Image (cartoon, rainbow, N blue to C red; front, side, top):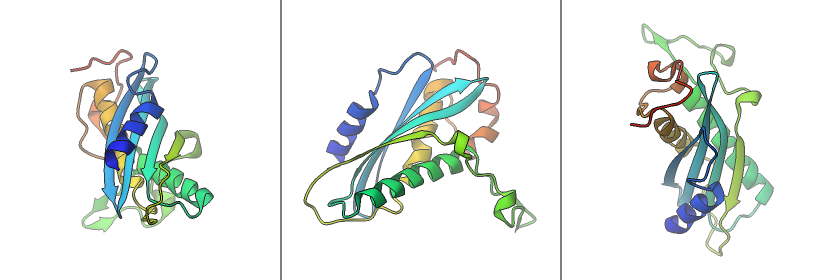
Length: 174
């Protein structure tokens, strides 16, 4: 099942055929008996990385509610990208600095990438869909940033990493 999900993600994302200046990152993931593959397209605009699009392929067995599945997948990807790029939950003397969402940076609508969803059709029992698309989003973005900058990013939020501050217009792949 995972091989089929990966092959579909490669095909649907146009892996390796992006225009100049668009960098791709890939991740596959398994949880709640659900198979997920995501490809993130990242561009560098005004010296900053911008997540343009995420292709997400999911095999969660029979999809009982297609519209509900679509919104869960899109929301999971958006939230995963938001946490990876912007989410900054800081502590001071062991106390959270943000005690409410007005002090916690989330992804804004204008920053949310296009999310293209592909569901694998089969007759297997339905499985989990609430969580499986969130964790791989950050990994796919991190891998795209590695392709763009030549540097592996290990700490979130990505936009606070010194490696990503003022990325050169023509990244050097190392």
